[in-house]
Image (cartoon, rainbow, N blue to C red; front, side, top):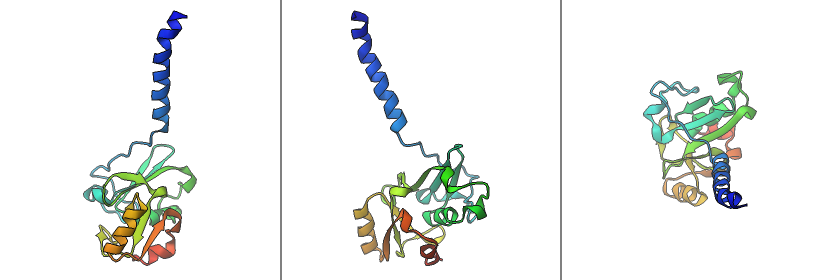
Length: 160
């Protein structure tokens, strides 16, 4: 019984560490100098503030030079990676425009039509907080604040 009392705190600590590690978001890799955007072919590492990533269940990661090219890829994966499907994606990140930290793209807010341009010109500007997206849209003449599901091919067409 005394052994159990000594081991119990250690076991509880290990259990907490293990559960925290499982619930932690996946680490986001930085693009190498040789990584190219699958949509436009630009070297992504030249634009670290705009990087978007797609990680598949097999741990393969693709890098994009902005949310616009990511969504172009996402809506037409068959064109860019015929063997890949949306349901094989395990994580999608974009960099929050203000903090420059990677955020879950599925939970992000995207401003379209602003006067802020990315590496490929007109861009979807991502934010982790709705209030930041709305303030940015007001300050930079953004036309819409969109959620992930709202970014359609028609929206992308307006950014050409």
